[in-house]
Amino acid sequence: MAKQDSNPLGVFRFNKIIIPILIGLGVGFYMIAREYNKNSSLFSDLASLFTSYTIFCLLLALLFECGRELTYMIRIRMLSGNRLSWKQAFHIIMLWEFSSTVTPTSVGGSAVALFILPLSGLSAGRSTAMVLIATLLDELFYIIITPIMVLVCGLSMSFATKFKFSVFGMRISETHVFIIGYTFMVLLTLIILTAIFFYPKGFKNFIYNLGSKRLFRRWQHKFNKMGDDVLTAAEEFKHKSFFYWLKVYGVTVASWSCRFLVLNCILAAFSPQITNHAVIYVRQLVMWIVLCISPTPGSSGVAEFAFPLFLNGFLKEGFEGVLALLWRLFTYYPYIIVGLIVLPIFTRQVHLRQKQKKQEK
Image (cartoon, rainbow, N blue to C red; front, side, top):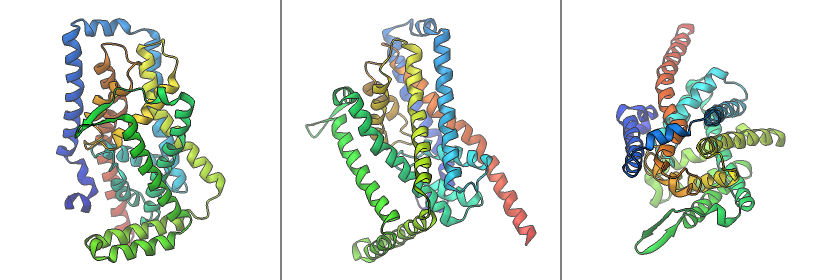
């Protein structure tokens, strides 16, 4: 663990990449094999479903996936004050996404982002502020849009899933997990909002004092860094106008919507009769809480397993495993492939930039 902390790019080691791939593909192929045992004509039945409408929906899914990354690039450029070029923004977002595929969802790619942003020519302070604000915007998307969508679709439709399990004899459902996860997310967001925009110095002093207590002394340097990061973010963004925040939040909503609409298109491709796409959208929002607490890198295995439990009623019967794997082929595996291509290019550019700076000196 210490190694990874000192060099965040350690998450891109071969063993870190291959494990989530094997877990995800293993679960996906197991689900398909189980379906094939029930229906030996599974693949010929799947081929018969392909029509011009199917191809149109899959192309639309691809368009939304590209839209997701384009809006992320727009946001990262806005947060940088347009200091990043489009090429730099593309490299950063792809590496950020790549790191998210090989770390648990609760961890994400923030550590890598904090490492690569300064290598792109931004100050350490600006980089820290950008990562904090980007995380805050993502949390705000979820805590604002989710209740709106639940109200639109209704509680019964939003939580009508098969996600049920028992812990020590106690029955746990998606509603319990959602309430706990959502409450934690709201509290965390309120703390970050208050710390950055209202009492940054007070928060820094509080965190410094907390870190000096005997109970937390072994993590004092991390507490101090947290306080410094919040103060830096406050200084970097305190003069931004309301219109700026409205724009950057709008881009955040667009990027997350593109992310979720990919699945809407995939399901519509094989079930043209689907009309209630708002329910598919809100079910994904509910499922996201479960994926956030997944211990596996990039939620591999857990995502494939949860997919039919949350989207029951919208899946073509007998094709749950195929659709789960197709969904991940659109939203997960491409980032591993693109990341493997971008990483050496980015590294080479950083070395060239550093070499050029040395020559100028």
